Image (cartoon, rainbow, N blue to C red):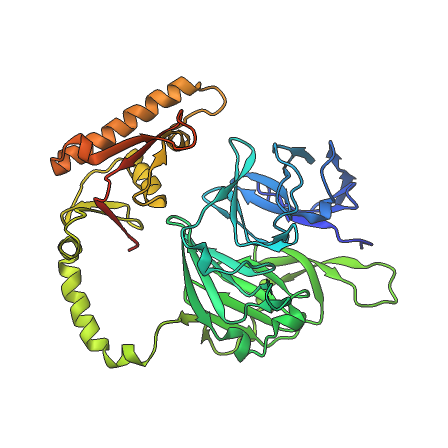
Length: 441
């Protein structure tokens, strides 16, 4: 039993359920063991830290972004060079390719729609720029799920600054491709069909990720949302508890529960129950989201569209070139494929794909040479700047020679160079000036 919310998490290496009580006591649930917690201090309160498991390591990261601690040998060790930012409270937090990401949140009197990532080599947080962030409103306390390269975000709240009122996202699902950093927007009728009013429930809702599902609990009913199959199920078994936090392990949900019996002295307690007890009384599956642009026009002209699409598919690479012959190169972002006059360029190296992806972030724009340094840095701590520059120049030269061999263009037609207008010491380059299109397919 606990008088204040404890920190509950699962250790990655052992899968052991751990609880930190009052920032002083480490409780090993499986072993029923209590020992003093070892640490050298940490910013803020420990109950505001969020656990992440990456490979065999467990990290505790502050809810608002900033401090990062590693849990090892029953102690907390701070590893970051950051500070207590409090800039992304209520953000969507997830791990992708063994890196920690925060999306959205609230801080410094503003709602956010930014994506940040923790760099384990530099031990700092960095902003990750998405290509069409204007499509997505800033959101706090949103639900989310990652499936493959996609981040799905739905629900949440924002502020309508013009009307000075809170806005609750009950209509849209936003999907971010974490490889191309392109957002998509879909509609959902989930909240309306289930009479699920975020304005009255958002502060008390609990959710957790399990396999392909995001489970949402409103203190009475459970909802399981599966983005892989694009459906959701309402489970008609009633739980009359308030879950504060939880982790799953071996088909069991371990939870810190709020005590609603005011006659008891304690405010929180620990409880475990099988996940099958949540899903034992399912209702009928319903679709969760759909394309906002589908309407009757697609139904009327569906057959014609399919025939045209089939013809275009058979000769799609050549048609793309014919539609814009002035730009003979085009690059498929999702498949990392480069084409010249409709013919695929074979055997692109990993470094060449990195360069093309960098170009795609700044289409037909000059890029500082220094921005290529990070992708060709092998050892941040021990490698000197001259070695990095030398490697960068060799990689860019190889890439430029590939373009020349494929197209037979002169090098001067493939690369433009200039000095930065503000700082003349900075050299900027533009590959394939007005000769390349980027295709999101």
